[in-house]
Length: 307
Image: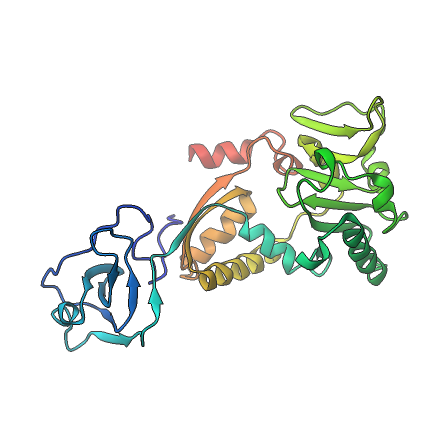
């Protein structure tokens, strides 16, 4: 099982530093690209106008005449018509699968950038969504900007303005804190008597033990427990959406941080079906708030690591 097996044709150099430009080898290319503005990231030859590819690897990067030497009767010739070409981008810390899964979930709210200008605009967007979905038992929202509140402890009273009769939990854009309304704290059983869990913090009002509105790191599992996990089908749809997005942005390799067994299975299935046309390095959750929902003893994680 090889997650890194499939790769988009545009991946001709993943590492942006020290890429060497191949010299003519006498081989015949599968495809040649001509008449382009090719940025090579090779200081000895920063720009080229053509390149030849065979079996997903470069044979030649240089002039049109140099590429002609690698062109045979069966070679596909692509005229770039002066378009810009560069090595694929490698994103070393990515959460695209989760972001896409949430973005496609009609029962979740992804706050638009233009609505994130202030706490008031965020609360107004949440209220509008909550009012439009009276059927939802939980209002799940992504995401409020880190640093909007001191210590990421958004006050429950402010969020109560969006709804007081249903729990609201709002994930920070960094993913390490939740902001909740009074109903969310009630549903999660968090009071002034609730102790901070190991590796977690419940934000408290200054000078007291009364929760102020934020839960952090492993304390987030108290809010995660209020939310159903995405279905296998939802994660698979999110993965397809994620792959399409990174393809469009020129990202050809990602390290997906914080995956679960469901993410792994969906990614492997996509790879085996030939649909994962970008490198994916997968990093499991380990003793985090999210994995605690499903794998308290970390048995699934150990199984994958030791396999």
